[in-house]
Image 1 (cartoon, rainbow, N blue to C red):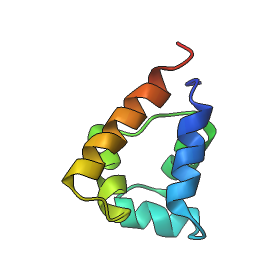
Image 2 (image 1 turned 180 degrees about the vertical axis):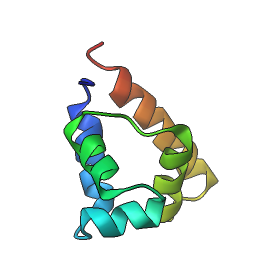
Image 3 (image 1 turned 45 degrees about the horizontal axis):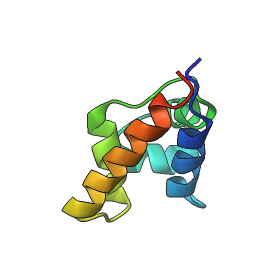
Length: 78
């Protein structure tokens, strides 16, 4: 299991009130992949992270800041 509780919270926040299947469809993954990201069982690929940023409506600068946040969150506690 990946130690990334903060990342799981971030994914849940980005998903908002949408169901896991609806969010997964929006970012191009299955609902079970979304669940694994939220629970820390897996981390998404860079292309999925980019899809999350696009889905959230982030511009280029925001996407870079988002990637920095992902790296900081995913590497914490390792």
